[in-house]
Length: 192
Image (cartoon, rainbow, N blue to C red):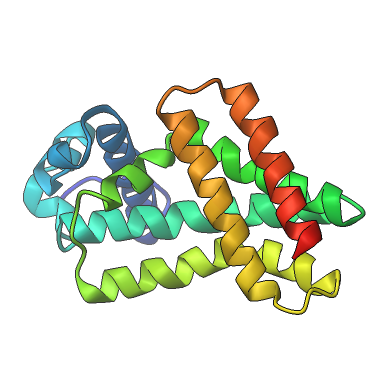
């Protein structure tokens, strides 16, 4: 019988799952999607590939679980940043600054991966749902400010921030891109 490294089997499995997710993220950051396999994740934590399948059904499932882990953390950061500010411009800038900071996070590797990997429809649908939670705080700020079309403006604002992220990831001057992106975002929100 395998040894467990926690007080209960459930705690052991939760710890193993967390270790596997951490290993998967390390592989994704270092090697990209091509290096992310159940065997590679298992090897990183000392588990056989067959044991990894107790936690993940496939590479796509690993990616989906990484997203399930990352997006709620980022959504909470966005909500916290927005709620700590007063006034439309300050709240929009706070949302934008956190969104742009995503580029400096290891979690940004997930975005790069999704452009190169085809996910099963169920995974893609869930990714789309989670994506909406990221836009949600900006939508709420705009609705609170009385915008006639807060959903549309939030999506357009998200697009502006996405372009800022791409420029930063490509090596553009991060400070310049951040300040310019936030300025454009605030102008767009004020005039819409």
